Amino acid sequence: MEVAARRPALSIWLMAARPRTLAASIAPVIAGTAVAARAGGLRPAVALLALLSSICIQIGTNFANDYSDFKRGADAERVGPARVTQSGLVAREMVKRAAIIAFACAMALGIAIALASGWPIVVIGIASIAAGWLYTGGPWPLGYHGLGDLFVFIFFGLVATCGTAYAQALSVPPSAWIAGAAVGALATAILVVNNLRDRTTDAKVGKNTLAVKLGPAATRAEYVLLLAAAFALSLFLGRPWPLLALPLAIPPLRRVLKQDGAALNPALGETGRLLLAFSLLLAVELWP
Image 1: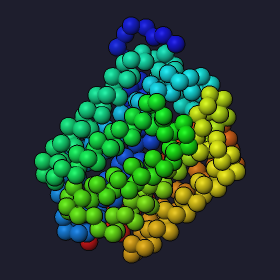
Image 2: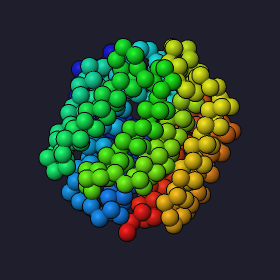
Image 3: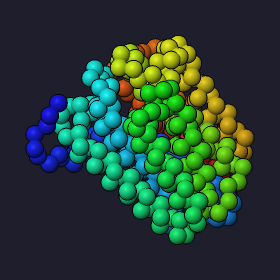
């Protein structure tokens, strides 16, 4: 679909950034910062840079997904929230440029962190940006081969949490791996909702997400297991503060177990809010 030659409004770019999913980039930085504080290495300025970089990586990934999925025809019968490229609101190449700009901002922020924390941060940043683009782009997109869930767990869980801890404390305590796994499980749960909702249309265009491969029953079981794993892992870190977020798990869990298609859209935001609340309570648990 072609678009008119006009500058898209800010509200359209906000739609493309998919703010309901941004908890996945904020939560690991919160958890990693708490780990660093517990290790006596809290550096607020570095934490802020890490937060901004993480958000830029996710926004860049969301823009890249918008562009690549449209290019591959995956959004032709979309039942989820509107994509700006498929809707004709923003030209495809403009969305691609926006993704590149977001990734460039993330890299610039990463270099600033590296000046304070060392070269491993650059490696983490390059790997994260490459994975963000290759999630739906490139010759062998990860999300089209059932690897999206693993991608989210690793990069929005383990890498972002441990990377944030390292950037401040210059070490990765064992608690960072546990916290990263817990946060990554809930971040992956957001993707599971998305892929459960889209599995029928994804299958039609050859987007073989894990939900397409597993089917609806096993995908719903995956969602339950991810939520259970997150809360179980939090118990290994000490005081069970994250359990206070359990009530927030009930509404999206009910939707995932009983509903399908577009009716699952609210569960995206609900799972995102669960992740954000969980990460804040996890930080209280970890804080010295």
